Image (cartoon, rainbow, N blue to C red):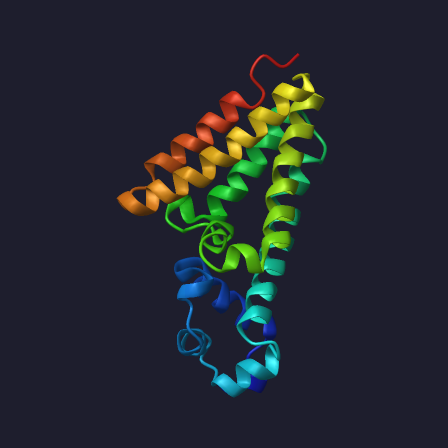
Length: 188
């Protein structure tokens, strides 16, 4: 498909799949070109800063998705358990029921970690913070809520790694159930 006919959002979605599967270091320019159907010069037209600009565009896309579909429900209307379930359903969809790797997780590994540290820190901090705030709102003491929120993120991220290694989504499914059970446990 010629560069002029491929919307930028579609290009970024295709890049996201490569970075999700390969991480920053493993995503070669040739592979990114092949995945998008664009020549290298067309990729530089969209992303003058090269692979770094591509990864940033993908991070911004994931951040927008996470904000709109996972974090916004946590801060929305309704009882906290219902809002937590909405976030977990969104994550289940985003990660293909545990079959798709976490882009943020793959970028934490290798050279992407230092290169995109602030994006990664903001993303994970925002997720933990939204979960913590929901737990506090539900009546969990703040210090306990923070620990539980971090545990939820650790479980989900770790479960995605294990699910990928085993080629079995069961650990991810258990992590989602555990998050629903444990984050708000004992809340008023």
